[in-house]
Amino acid sequence: MRHEDGSKIASPEQMEIWMKATMDWIGGIAAQNKFVSGTGLLFDDAKVVHHNKMVTNGPFGEIKETIGGIITVRAESVEEAAEFAKGCPVLGGEGNTMEVRKIAKRDNGH
Image (tube, rainbow, N blue to C red; front, side, top):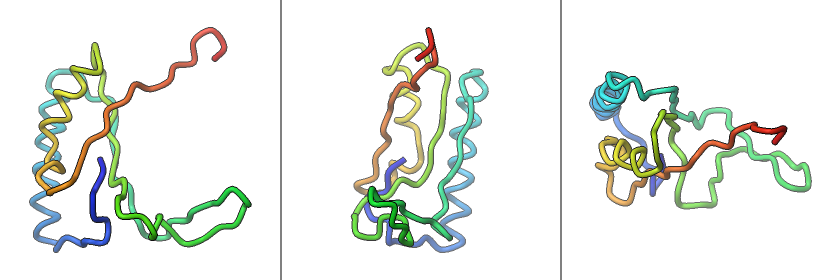
């Protein structure tokens, strides 16, 4: 889940509405036995570790877009997972997006 403007902070009332909508969305996926896991990503006490091993306070204050959470689903295809993503409440925010990817498997020693 990507938020276009990570500097925006929702009110407690907005967060409650968003969390209920998100839990309802996840519940619909779980009812199909397709939900695996998911979590939001907090900004408090976040750190960024740079290539030169320097550690700074994060997350990524210099970029416009932030990653707000992840969800893992059991899908037959990327297209099916994208259909699940279309229902995510985060898409109600202008400019917000959902990125859909396969998870790497550890098959044959890889």
